[in-house]
Image (cartoon, rainbow, N blue to C red):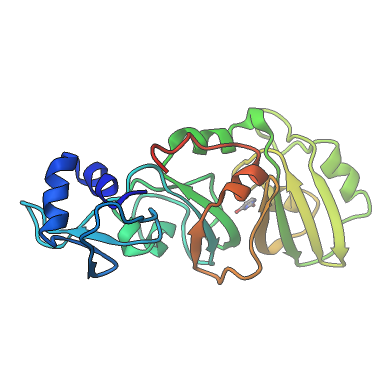
Length: 245
Ligand code: URA
């Protein structure tokens, strides 16, 4: 989007005032003064700062919503509130720290893998709503093999003592102690509880997919990237249209 529009929306300042800032060399893109109001900046890729009346070198918030794909490491809690343990939001680069990002659903502290973070509450709700049945696929390492009827038990909808039995889930046996589980809902510790119900213990858990969106093999643990239009297509649930992209 145009630099003047980005700064105008990001600082809630009129375009004419922002034009004056830009001409006066008070707006920097990635640390370099840019005097062309029509130069293109991409929210999420460029860092824009401006000398505003209130602050020299103020970081300009990018307009519109942000959606990120995180390769969650172990040891981080999927929460927006700080506590005794580190939270996934601490992994967000400084330029996005002040945005209202929230994780889409939860992964346990010791679970790794695909976690989406978004500022768009409607998108978050659509991805987690039980009515949508968005699939989530997990790789689990177990302490011991599951019984012979495990695939059928997962498929019939297991009763974990919650208000309602689980929705049917897919279990794929990959090896004696390695399985893939596909859920269509998201309950507390669900994979671990389903496995425990059959007498085994999950010793490592990794989410590899949400809907049709597979975690990139090249995204290092602890790193994140922006959600692309093809990711959105793969998820099958669209965020609200961005203003102005
Ligand atoms: N099921 C679990 O038990 N833990 C997770 O983090 C996700 C699904």
